[in-house]
Image (cartoon, rainbow over all chains, first blue to last red; front, side, top):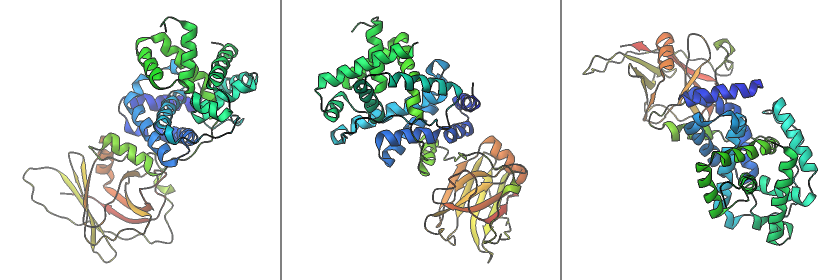
Length: 181
Length: 231
């Protein structure tokens, strides 16, 4: 296990025992990545900050529920944050701005939180995404990076609702077969 | 949908993680997740597999007040502020500002009759003109009370006074942003903080950006220091 992830596991384990200093350390090590993700999804600093706070409050209360099947500590915490971001997007859906950006590829640069194991996963995902039909890939990435609903995807891509639904479904199916177990 | 429909569930788990599973279907799926370990594992599969997308996004520094808000929401009862960013490597590393002189501060004994025999430690932070600014009162039950006296002037706009515990060895520990203007603040110290405070009896006050040091270490000049005296 990479050193950074090892540190996070130790901090999370102590957090689960009510150690506030460890919780502070966890925040110090992870909050930039989580806030960056929230900012990207929500495009609103105040809202991203609110979600960040909710995320760490949830982490504090559920630290003992983490286990390796959830992935790395960052996978687990960013998933918590991601779902809070999606909730926030749902709440303001009526005002959601639908962009017409079609393709937003993930950065090729690895972030500081990334370890060697992450790099293998990233490369595999990147390869599998590149192998996808362009329409499938764009649909999945827009949904993932923007939190678009099926309906919003249909509007953004100028396609009937059934079509974008089908693209997402087929794209994810192909992706799973490529990624393996 | 059947709960044992593996392929169908995988497709739903994927859309749950991607976010396109919406509304009632999403809520229903979350209820199924509570009942099905296999469904949870399918969700975790997608969370793990798509996690590289999360780390591909640029990082960003959260607002300075975010950590304080988290602490307040979680630990409002004790109003404790734990330094979010660790420790100074050593007191030697303290970059004393050359622009602002260290002020000689004397601790005064303040006697307040107490109905019970409780060990207390008291320190008074004074201005260069020996005017009392803050009275710091630590009691054996881990409470630290800081009272700002009327003479305390608010820090400059966008600045706050921050109180630090100076352990005998190791880095200063953030205790709280100090009140100004004839108000009182009480915080609860951890066991470790109490031990260190009893050993060193030393406190310092630095000028920091509003809301406190963004790094967990003093970033501004140390403007006052005081020692606690046992009553």
